[in-house]
Structures are given as structure tokens and as C-alpha cells.
Amino acid sequence: MKTVLLVTTALTMAAPVFAQCVTPTAPSGSGGFSVSGGQIIGPNGQPFKARGIDILESTLGAAVGDASGGALLQDFPNTNMVRIAMESGYQSYTDATFVNAVNWLTAKGIVVEIGNYDAPTQSVSTGSQLTDEVNWYTALATIYKGNPYVWFSTDNEPTDTYSGLPAGSVTAEQVAVYNAIRATGSNSMVGLEPIGGGGSLNPSAYTDMTDVHWDQHYYNWETGQWIAEDGTILPSSIASRIPSSVVPVTPLSSDLRWAWLPGLRGCRGGSGCR
Image (tube, rainbow, N blue to C red; front, side):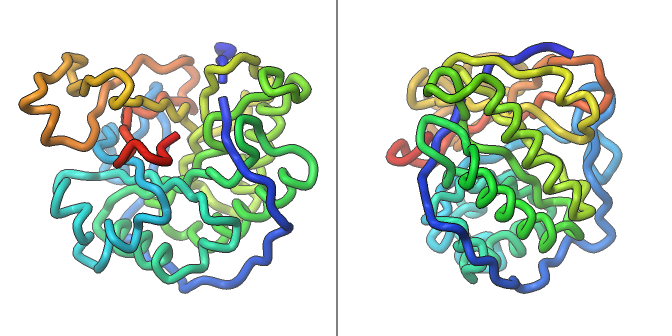
């Protein structure tokens, strides 16, 4: 398996207190997602191609206001995946706004990927911060393990040596998060965050992982371009009307348990997007 360069963001905080949430619901008769042949296979047995956006947790109330999917699905009716950037602390997953948004979206067969933006800024969780993070993932995975449309991703854009941490800190965080999720009995897809700030991963630490993907970021406000499914750059007249797009990418490994997530998503609004 190929070595990958990776990058992360975060915040120091007190040890979290975990409360019980409303039991979530999944679409009727839904199966799970899995990886085969370097592709993510959906419950319908077909390759899953993500079409959606990344939104900040603090905007959920305005974006997903009711069971219809609210303004988000009114503006972007073909969305099949939403990545929520969780940045309000490790207790906020019990808030009704978050719980409702996850349940409403997944009931429509829309994947919700929960991403951690509460880790140390320009770094990756280690020590007590990693303990807090792992406890958070454990609580979420326990709550949503019956809902295959809830996915997870590791620390947002992590770094280690680039930020002065020991080499291998990113690998340690990703392995710890993966193991914590699987220990709950959850078979949810787990996204591993690539970094671009320097550092490397230990390939041998990932060989036993299943149903994971590299969660690549695409920042359209930096490139000024949107990319269509066939890899072509869309003209501005079309691009101005869409939130993000998808580019199928060759997987990093031929290992059937791995895939590169085909969704390259922009963040809704440049302020606070990472």
C-alpha cells in the first residue's frame, strides 16, 4: 500500500461529558456501504458517487430546518452526501439541531459524514486531547452504529512533524479513531484525512483496516473552478449554480478494502471553511 502525505486543524478543550441522544433512524430496508475494487459500494450494490457539500455545524439550523431537508435540499436537490464540520465542542452532538439534521438527512438516503474540527489547530490530537477525541467518536459511533448513512472522518487536515509533533502522530490518531469506531460494533465508512503540510504515514498500520477511504478536500474558492464528473472544468455559467462536484479518482491501492472517496467538495461559504 502506498505511503501518503497528510494535514490537520483543532482546539484545546476540557474533557467532554457525553450524554445520551435520541435513537437515530436509517432509511427503511437500507444495507451498508463497503469498499470493493477501490470503489465505495452503496446499499444498492452500485458504486457510490458523492454529490454534496461541506457545511459548518453552526449553520445546520438554517441549512436543514425540517424533515424536508430545508434550504439545503431546496438549493441543492441532488445532494446525496453532506459533510458536517463539527466545531462547537465535544458535547454538541447531543444538541437537537444536530440530531435532527442527521436523522432527517439520512432518512432520505443522504450520507452524513461527521468530521472533527475540534482537534488542535494546525496539528493532530495526542495525549489527553486524543483521549477526548476517541471518547467522542466512541459515543457517536455507538449512537449511530445502526445507521449506515452516518460516516466519520478523522481530524481535519492533520499534521505532525510540520507542527513540531513526533513523526507518526497522525498515524496514531487515525488508528486510534478507527479502532474506537470499530470497537462499538459500527461498520460505518471511516474517512482518513490526507495532509499537505509535510510528514508521512506508516503504511503497515493501515493494512488491517476495512471500509475506509481517503477524504480528499477541494477548495473551489482558491482555484475558482468547479470540476465535473468526467474531470472537465465547468464554465462559470454552470459552475455558479452548483455547490460542489465529483471527480472519480484512481484509488491509492489495489487493496479491495480501500477506496478514494470520489466526492471533492467545496465548503458553503469561505469564512470558517478549512
